[in-house]
Length: 331
Image (cartoon, rainbow, N blue to C red; front, side, top):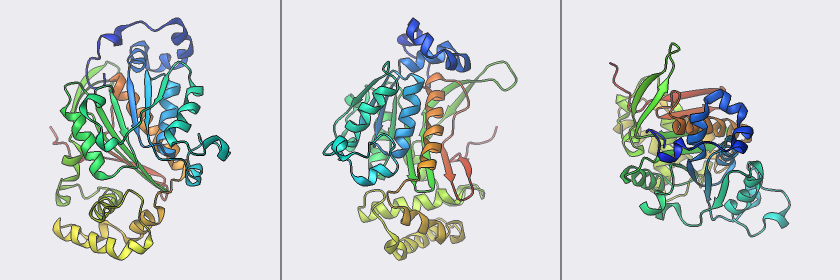
């Protein structure tokens, strides 16, 4: 699927019902792209406001199947950003996030198979992962993300990996398409392009002194927070402003070790990330979910220039920034 020529199923014809339902988007990205999309299988590990925006987008677009993995029971906190969870407790009480959202997503497009995948993402073996073409991970520890990304890369089939996090008004998307081929139309005529992606481990291991001076401050801040949560054995978002002194000490240590001016990681930005905890800002969820949906469709269809390999958004300035880490050598 993504990043290759697709499997034999990609050449199967769309049904008359599919052609009629997806007529408008077929006019935008073509019949072949829609065929590939209808054969793609997506797994989302971690159901929250951001990933649900993504799920809505790809279900409406006509992805082949979508599996949701999140055994956490719905709480009142989930109601703030996840628009698919009804506010009536009698409708979600005792149910997992995946179960509640699965039923609602089916209503968006009955032609898409939406199912719950029970289990712990950090324990997924290769046999299970082989069922999917795209894996999206959110609200998971760095250890879990690295484990899943590494497993995707070890498989004989091509599996695209994405991680996405929303920290209130800030957001981050990471993309690993491994070796990706796609068509681009720079001047009208389609041209075949090739991209080689680093793994998540490779990307975050690049010494900061080797990065561009223009690298967004949010990249560094996310790495500091990630490192702190890992060292303290915290789940993502299990932090508060009371952690600031320890987090600033971590920042100083990391900046000293990697020869980076501490001003590149503003204390005010770290305060915002700590204060966010697990809170998501719905408008930022919509932006991240929209970008991620667009990227996954580009990956599956092998059309259009994909993000390589980080995307950042900060509502404080309203800007979206792409970062290529490590920087791709210029020809």
